Length: 158
Figure (cartoon, helix red, strand yellow):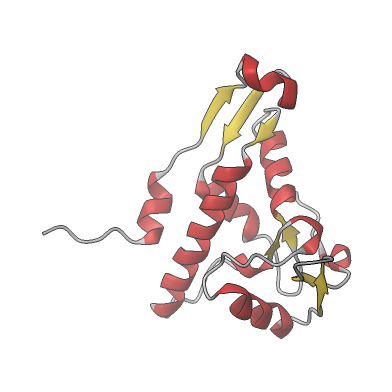
């Protein structure tokens, strides 16, 4: 019977892919190439985010597109890998590892909190508040938690 692969092992097994934007998608994205990022590249960027600072998924995607010299980074795989990075971090925290990736510092567009991270909104809100961030509800109908003045805490990627 084989041992179940850890989230870390999974993340390390995935490589980036670069595809040409197909003609049927050119009207939306333009001509060029699209990056399916490697999780380790996403994680490398998140690890630059110090306590009390923040980053958005869009910032990660833009940075990787520039770094890899492509038109854009695919959003869906980036979000999927981000969740798996969070799961690996939680798994490693449960193993008492000191260095875990601070996934909770990654926000969605407009500073919205990501409810799909481990522990849901409750856990991410607790971790963000612990680092000094205030939270407000955002939206007209469905109220979604948002970090107050999140722009002030965004890092400059190098």
